[in-house]
Length: 64
Image (tube, rainbow, N blue to C red; front, top):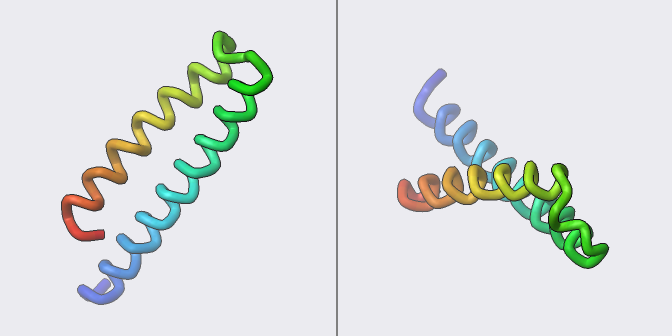
């Protein structure tokens, strides 16, 4: 894999992370509106969101 292919792979990864973060936020909002913030699903999504936010922050720090 050359440098260009690696950069393209990292950029695709960054897009995927941001897409998943957006979907997670939307699902959490649906649960919040339904009053289901104490469910296991909501808590799992909350943990996933925190992980995705951290990955996104690190990607941004590296210009991706």
